Length: 93
Image 1 (spheres, rainbow, N blue to C red):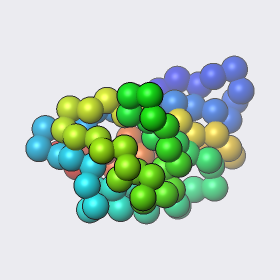
Image 2: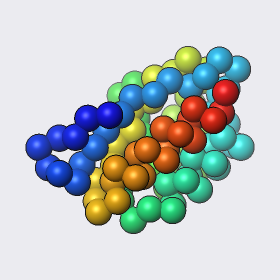
Image 3: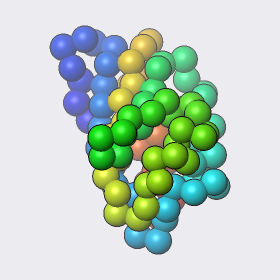
Image 4: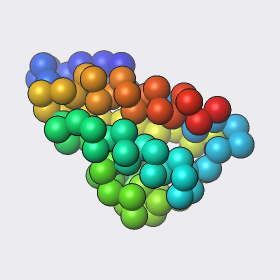
C-alpha cells in the first residue's frame, strides 16, 4: 500500500485468487465492505475504474481469476477502507 502526497489518499494492488471471478457473490462482498466506510473508494481493472460502492459497476468490470485490481481510497478513513478491501479480496481464496 502506498500513500500519495495527500495524507488521506491511498492505493493498493491486489490479484483475484485462482478460481475466483468477480461475479455476484464476491462482488457483493466487496461492495458491502466498501460501504462500511465514508471514504470514496474505487476499483480498477485494466483501463476501467469504477466506484467500489456500486455493485453493477463492479460486475461490469468483468474481472476474472488472476486479474490485477487497483484499489484506491480517499477520505478520513481511507487507510482503514483500503486495508478492509485488501483483506476482503484475500479472503476470497
